[in-house]
Amino acid sequence: MAHLFVSNQPTAAVGEWRSPKARMRCEDLRVRFGDREVLRGVSLDMGRNEVTAVIGPAGAGKSTFLRCLNRMVEANHHCEVQGRVLLDGEDIHAPGVDAVRFRGRIGMVFPKPNPYPKSIYENVAYGLRIHGLVSCKSEESSLVELVFRQAGLWREFGRRLLAPALSLTPGEQQRLCIARALAVNPEVILMDEPCSSLDLGSGAKIEQMIDELRQAYTIVLVSHSLKSAARVSQRTAFIREGRLVEVGPTAMMFTAPSHPLTDRFISGYSE
Amino acid sequence: MMHDGAEGHTFKRFDGQLSNLHLMVVEMGQAVHQQVQDALTAVRTQDIQLAQKVLGRHQDIDRMEVRADAEIVEVIAQNAPLASDLRLVVAVSKSVGDLQKVGEEAARMAMLLEEIQLESAPPLMETLLAEVDRMGGSVLSHLDTAVGLFGQWDEEKALHVIAGHRQMDGDFQTELHRVMTCLLEESLDLKAAVRLVLVAKSLDRIIHHALNLAEYAMFEVYGGVAVRS
Image 1 (cartoon, each protein chain N blue to C red):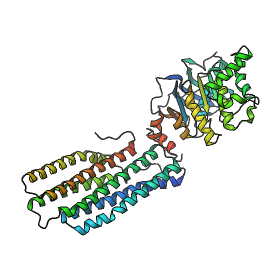
Image 2: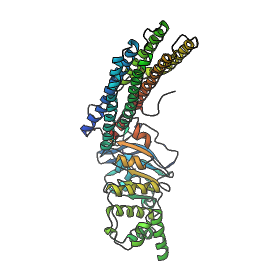
Image 3: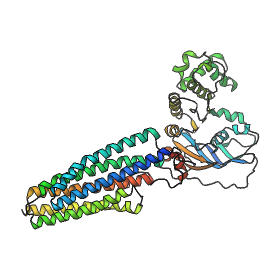
Image 4: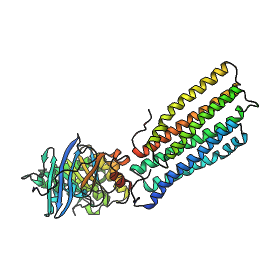
């Protein structure tokens, strides 16, 4: 990773960015697309068994931040990244690190459900196969069932595994995508606006699912819906213009944030 | 106590609704202040007609609370406020409840007047009435300050009100002790003395409501738990 930036002093954010429960850690993360600096020294811990919500106005760098956590940001060849992203103490951006291996440990859910144009069963089984997690058909079907059960979706999908995934409602498709992300047994799940394309009821089911999944996973959630972030997260980070402005317990952030910019954003004041 | 920024909420009507909530507290505060002031005047001057006016206006206070509650529910339903807006709505919601109770205390004092009234009050009774009136003046001052915090935040004044209730606790105990001493010496009419103590107790309750108002205002500004100790 090239060291490209002159101004390397991290900007102090309000609140403690470190967490005693940290499983994933970003240190002075900086991202530039050509001349445009999108992230300007973000340091943040994401704790195990908790949901860390990342909030901020459009263009603040939230999604870029999320895509640094599984190196998806590198898909853009004009992108230059500086700083460290540690998973259990190991820098995933370090030279020589196999990005594909790390992506198996970090699942991702996108704003719009994007199931494969195959059966419900195949959407989960495919990941198991390509990651070499199954050796025979019976083991595969057992694991598929286990994945759906762990995701709390077996009752919903168990009787129609051979139905085309694209025949499902958008909410069902998104829940299937979450199950698919869980199939390869990740440690961290990144969620980029997982409810943004869903109606209220479907969004509520996803939120319920997130709440249950945090018992076993480290979850990082980017959301434009402040209400959704307030409901499902335990820790909230507010990013604005590429900088971490404030981080703290969600209850505190949504009732009595310390930084006036956080208060203005959460209260819905004009930028 | 609104945001200092020149720009308001993206949804402009929300700004108006929040301002209106503050205004409701101030207006209701002024109305109950007038009620307490008139009730005290009626007690001091033995003015039955003024006491009846206080009782007649009591329903207006209740109506103000009902209107404020409806406005609060509407603001929550439409805007689901967060952060400082949420604290404002919570503070206003709790404040109107306390103000309604202050209104009840004013009405209670007015109702007690008839029992206190004496054809020719003995000098001792006049002294006690003057003492209650002095307490009343202090209570009105604190209530006025507490309500004013919702118009313009002033931390020093808020802390003054919060500290003030301790002094008033002492005043009430002193008053009670004095009346009890007079009763033991059989120099006071029992019925009138009890009513006088009840007026003093109403004032004691009002100062606690004023303390609550100051705490709600402080919660609105800073968040966190109440500062009472």
